[in-house]
Amino acid sequence: MTMKKIRLDLARDPDFPGGSSEHGYVFVAPLDNDDRIIIEDWRTHREECRVTRFWGSEEREIGHLIRKPGGSWAFHYDIHGDEDNDEAGYRFGDERFRPGEYVSIREHDGITRTFQVKTATRLK
Image (cartoon, rainbow, N blue to C red; front, side, top):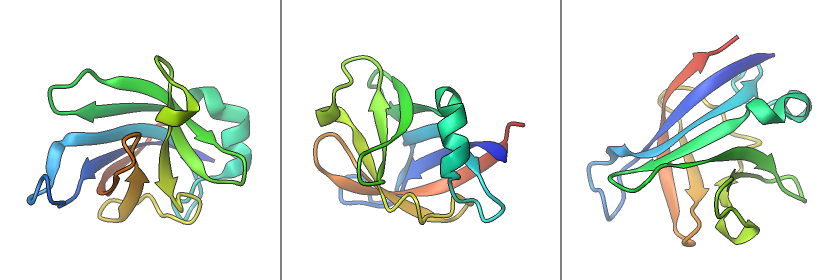
């Protein structure tokens, strides 16, 4: 198992035509050799699988990477974090978290945005 710290920056979208490095997520997850999330290792290391959402001048949100019933992945925030505020990763179980790859997240306001993997740094 390789724990990695992954940074996702907002890709181009209608609100940010050039994308934005000031809007995104940093999270930790166990990845296999293909840079996909390892479910079994997440189960034993879930407390380490933290997420920080940064969004311009807004206060940062801190939470965890969780697995929801049915097998989807989401970010759940520790403060004011109820299920309605979870942000779901679109097909995170199939995604490769390698620099240059793109992933989608349905944010708590219901908008799905695309993010680019900027870094995936080995932690241990």
